[in-house]
Amino acid sequence: MAILLTALSYFIGSFLISNGLSVFLALIIGISVVSLGAITESLRAPMWLIILVPFPVGV
Image 1: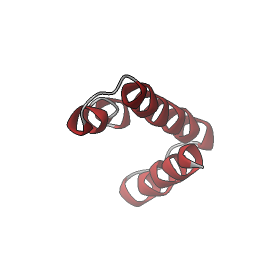
Image 2 (image 1 turned 120 degrees about the vertical axis):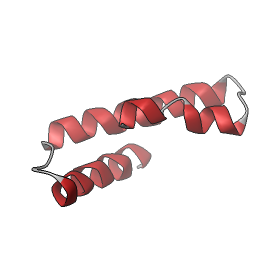
Image 3 (image 1 turned 90 degrees about the horizontal axis):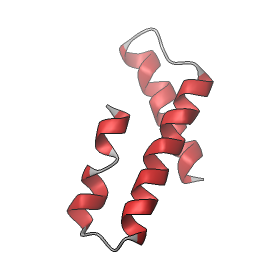
Image 4 (image 1 turned 90 degrees about the vertical axis):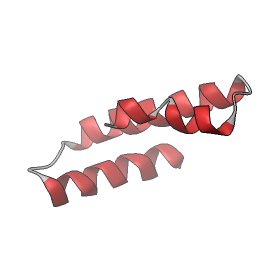
């Protein structure tokens, strides 16, 4: 569910700002961001690092 909501927010946001991403690219970004956050959390990293690690992928 987190992957779909993240992908949907990137998809909708890209239409508001520019020409828009394809659904496939938005889904790839969603998978990457959520996976990196989950991996970082499983390593018992501090909260600030869990937020910081996936950020460059989304940008």
